[in-house]
Structure formats: C-alpha cells, structure tokens
Image (cartoon, rainbow, N blue to C red):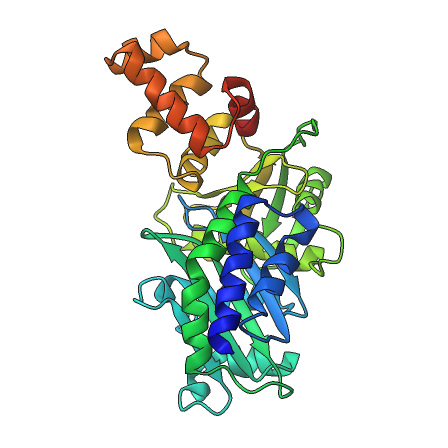
Length: 346
C-alpha cells in the first residue's frame, strides 16, 4: 500500500509540474498529492531563490506561527535538520520526534513545535542538481504515529517532482497586466521586530500573501523578511542579502537587506522591498528554467533588446547557432516567442 501511495503521489506531482496551480492553491495542491503517501497534521511549503538561497515564497496550513523564532533557529541556533544541512545529505530528509534520543538537543522541538501541539516533524530539502529549490516542513501531533524510516524513504522519492513543481510554478506565465508596486522600506531590530515600515513595504508584503484558503498571515510572511535580515547580519560588510520573489499577481519583487549601521552587524537592519527589473530577475529565472550558461548569455542580450543578428555578432557565433539557442530557450521557458518571454521577465 505504501508503494502504491508513493507512486500515486509521484504521478500527481509530475502532472502538477505540467499545469502549475493557481497562486492560492499551490500549497494545498502539493500537500494533497503528498498525503497520498504521507499523512500530516500541518505543513509549510517553501521556495528559495536558487541564486541567493534565501526564502522567496511560502504557503502553510496548521503550521507554526512564530516566524522570528524560526528564522533565528535556522540561522543562529545549532539545531537539528537545518535545511542547508539537509541539502548536503545523500537523502535530504530529516525527522525528529519527542521520543528520539536527539530530542533534548532540538530547541525547535522543545520551544516551538511542542507548544504548537506537534510531537513529530519531518523536514525535506528540495535539492536537485546541486541547487536548493525549496523545502517542506511537515508536522504530526499525537493523533498520528511519529515520522519513521518508511516515511523518510517515501519523502525521498518525491523530492524531485515537488522541486520541479515549485520551479515551474515560480516562473509560471501570467496574462493579467499589473502596475508595479512602489518601493518600500522596513526597519527590523536585533530581536526581529519590525519597528517601522512604510505603506509601500506593507503593500509588498501583502503581494506575497496567496489568499484563498491559505492560512499565511502577514506575520507568517514576514519570515521572508527575517531570513533576509538574518543573512544580512552574517555576510561580509558591504554585501547585502538579496532575493528575487514572485508575488501572487505575477509581479517580480526584490528584497534587499543590509545593516542600518555597517559597523554594527547585530543591530537594526534596513530592508528594501520593491519591483525587480529584468536584470535582477534573470539569474534566478535562468536557473529555475535550467538554462545553460550560453543560453543565459543569449537571454541576457535578448532582454537588452538585441536582435538575433546582433546577439550572434556579440557572442561571435553564426546566426544559425544563435537561432538554435533561442529555440532551446523558448522550449525550456514554454514561451511562444520573444514577446512572451520578455513579458515573463517583466
């Protein structure tokens, strides 16, 4: 029965990669398929910017609401099953339950999960081809048996189709035109409290909330902000934490976090949220679509407005070679041509 459940879940997830869900349905669609193999009481589906590794989207139901504590747990605490650590494992899945010998060493289990009513957690790093595309956090209470080795094996078989579904969803085509949001600023203190925020920044945070039956609140979505501030505090001076984010309407946004006072890396952090231009979007866009380095170069020139002839001249290749690269890009991005592809970057 377990094998049939995994096969059914895998088939449904592969189908979802071919027909990306509506924004408000993404998390529930993925987890509904996952439940064919793994029963869960609560869940969180996460996407990462494949260039920076920062969180770029999240969906949740009956999950854990303490966003600032979870961000500190991932970046500061030496806890079990951090996503970056799981991504290095041959099987990128980790489980922890209250009866495990390692349970006393998990701050997350003791101080975050148990108070929320969960006694067992599975974390899955959606890593394929050496890139961390996203992650799952799955929770069980006393009503379901703790996660075990059979659950780990089942989850491992579903990593690739879930990662592909998230990749395809992130770069989905949208037909509805939208006006760009203005750029806003938040100031986040050392305890990950937003001490000030412009209206434009609040509007950008609202753009990241899926709506529908998704249970993500503004405080939950701030986890994207807190991950950026945590990274900003742990990067060399002068190197801000930057991520590209896809809003629910299809708008591309960029988040940029840097210490307000560069000499004080533990103090307040300024976070800028606003529209992301094609040059900002393109590196992550190319990775999400699996473009080669040469296809990436062609796409960059295309986004700059160069004709096929000028692209060929710039790259010192024949027109036929340039056209072959363009056909490969259109195929990988599921674009009908230059206009739709450029619109996807806008």
